[in-house]
Length: 425
Image (cartoon, rainbow, N blue to C red; front, side, top):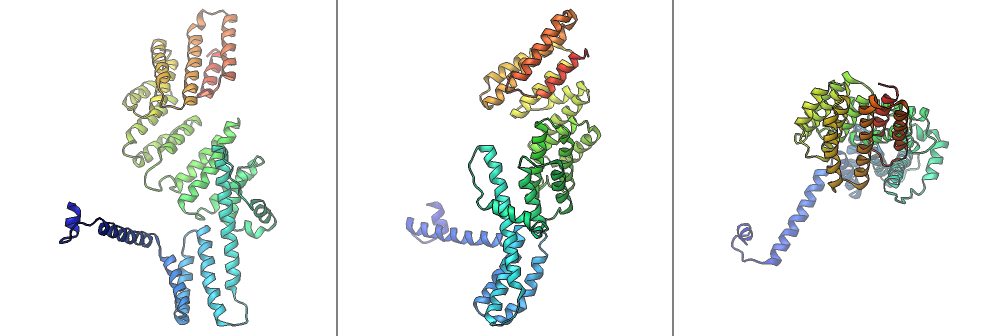
């Protein structure tokens, strides 16, 4: 009531009148948002269309060339570029048709080619997303017409000469079982040779497909692809693709740190940490930086500094709570501080068993990790007092457990630690 009186002075309250005014305001807001979204090039196209409707031929010819120049200044050669090319050529062809001249006009061919390119790019993009979602959520998306489109691309090289089509074709192929190392290199080369084909947001998503291919190869046992994955991260850093809104995504930051440390790229990771910490979300920045630096010191065996930094991490986030605790366990084991190790491991196990906020499979994988980690620590602690036969039996039993227990968190690290004991380190 108070708002109504202030907004409509001198008028008695009327619910019907208020609803009408709210609806009018909503319509005005819609119009304003559309105007905000429309850019200069779309405005030019719509203006040309209005000139056509009014048969203002002189003005149409006057404004046509500036519209063409504006289109060519569009910085990308993506689906939107070809859509605009098609629509502009369509207006040109409509204008030509009204002149009733019997001669060749290139606008019709340009309209047809642009429509082909737009359609193929969009169908390939959607087909890749469909296949990707089918894998993730067991959906049944069906990219109709795709076999025919793939056949045309293979048969007619002119389509593969369009960078946007060539790139999305490689994205599709990267999701197939027969995608080879040579194919992968061709895919990456296309991204490097044509870095401005797509807007940064779309280019970032395309790089994710390349990343996911590398991750699948790594998970399949081809650890050499870790180097290729790091290079993909570095290419994106060079192009600013992680800073699309000015904030570095936390997950990408963590993944880069973890991968770089696994590859022992220590100077590069240290530099990365300092250069990009300023772009982390202010809410998470201190936690992410301290935890990542603790990872660095842990990996470089500067354990005391790692422990000091972990004490500064606020374990309010499940990621830091779980992974920070596991890092501390690894440090205590490396330092052979068995008292702290067992005390902390028992606390972690109780906390994980009670934690219902973590997905069941993930919680189980952590609990399995803790059980095997405890057996490795016990073997390491008691090895001086075990006979060779006893030692070998316990070692083999742990080894068998690692091959059968599923799910299992950080299996690679467990294998490394057990391998050190097998070598008598």
